[in-house]
Image 1 (tube, rainbow, N blue to C red):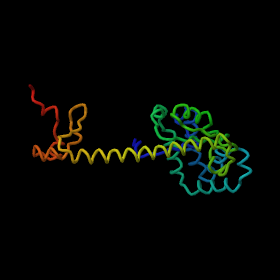
Image 2 (image 1 turned 90 degrees about the horizontal axis):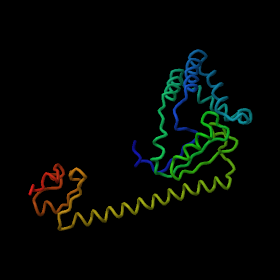
Image 3 (image 1 turned 90 degrees about the vertical axis):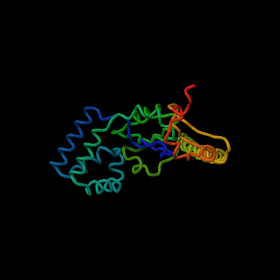
Image 4 (image 1 turned 180 degrees about the horizontal axis):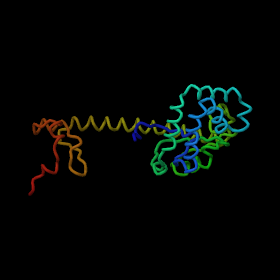
Length: 231
């Protein structure tokens, strides 16, 4: 909604498509289960779905950490989250419009949002970088908090950093150019205005007040085309 507020983007273990009918039914079953069996039972089933099999048994502290987090929630809160996830819309059409440096991460064994879904986003987001984290499931940042950076991973991370640095340089140069242009127009003797396609005034130089007696604020409420003599 506000792309100008986003400088860079990381999409980790996610997807742009909405739930399939089968996934929606599974979430509905989970909502009934958490109401029927309670939060601790939901936590036990949840970790089985999100961890890679080898990490479920090989990282007991991380698994218990997730269970503890889940148990701090209420049945209503969990059910509400499942309902919100089931109601997600398809954001795939928006991917091609992403113009900021984007890094896409996914666990090699992510069963909920598999690598194929991340690869599909990678193909649609211009100049995005895509990394599969080996030995990780859906909670890749916890299962492989420190993973061996392959040459491809190092290149992808370096590319994102380079794009981010170049974007910062471009934004700084643009700000300097805008400041210089404003300095020139604010002190020019000529009448300078910026209008849109409909003739609405977007900017009026201070010279309007010096020459015609109209302040920029007064002119800002007018349409320049209506001020043109019909002849």
